[in-house]
Image (tube, rainbow, N blue to C red; front, side):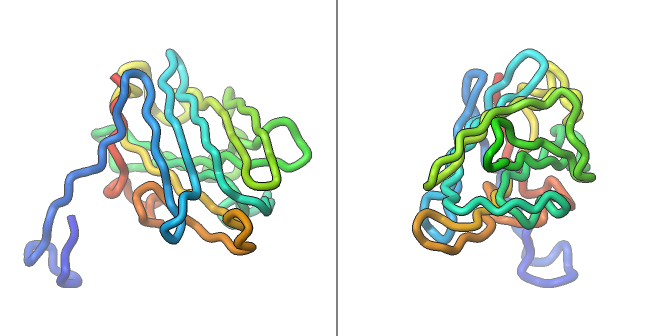
Length: 186
């Protein structure tokens, strides 16, 4: 729900449908930063996990292990269709290493999550799996769920500056699933 009148719920509000990401077992998406292509992503449903592939155009990866939301990385948000409580996690590229780090909102590694990365001068590729149980989904609910993703880029291409962008265009997904897309992987 969106309203043009602050603190008033029933006057001049509009309901906008959720964006839908759908496909037979997988779906793709793109995210821009300031109008420029910045991220390509893919979600693939597997029996006991969801697999994600991200290509992020960040030419200057910045690590911040204590505050993952401040460094380069991919932030993911999940919710079932009937819950409004988001599940939040990060996949963080690790320059000089083979694998990214995948942590929850408390900066604790997610049990059973695994991934690989490829880092070049222009971008990085993340390919990782998250067990369904760690994001409160199961084989049935993983066919249709709510999702958002925010991405921090330290430097978009040759621009020497970056920013934060998201699939929903908002940066408050840690608080509510109201702006998430519906993912349909039936």
